[in-house]
Length: 251
Ligand SMILES: [Zn+2]
Image 1 (cartoon, protein in one colour):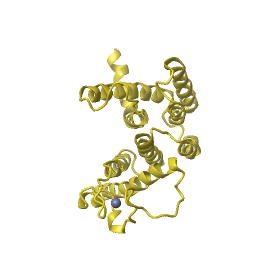
Image 2 (tube, protein in one colour):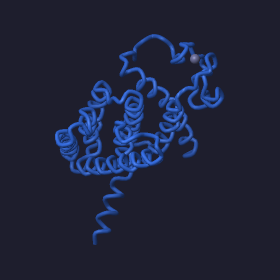
Image 3 (spheres, helix red, strand yellow):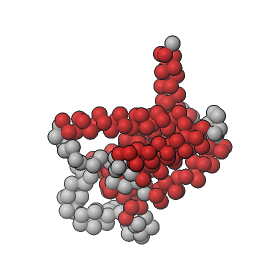
Image 4 (tube, protein in one colour):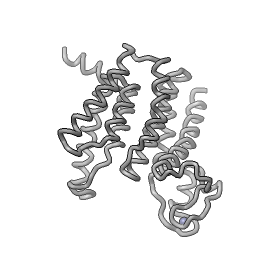
């Protein structure tokens, strides 16, 4: 039965990931409620239902538009798979509890912002304003321990990044600052500090690798959103384990 649910969550996640792709691609262009059906971004060909199946369509069409043969971005299937994986994992960790909603919401936010930041170097206010009341309500009903950890986390996230922006003059942006404030609600003050630590570490390591592999040069501005979202998810699922391991290793 457990396996059956996991498969169901994986499929649900991939379909939802496809939806997150659409939100991430369309919201920054203010085209979310445009009635136009899904289409090829290059030749505008309307896509049939069998071209819209998450991951499978991409594989069967070898990642190309059927009409104009332009190569389609790998982001779509990767994000669909990632959402499927995150949804299954969330269910494995939380089962059918209310906290599962927090995990699924956080995963969706992460996937949407990875798409917007990779495609447009943007963390849209609209997306964060949509998730803000959801996270607040969830943390009122499912408070962290202690309950004020959410408020402090949000405050620390905001002030911390603001200071970095002031000192580094452009190392991070206003979008990153608001995102940290938003994530602080879900993760609490210890969680947000851990997220900051992981995201800078992750961004540094990946950037050095990409520079060494000559994929980017030093001046290339890195979209920080994917690192923040990835780190927030790692912290959400493993933060307590990591903090406990750290504390015990001190003695
Ligand atoms: Zn096309």
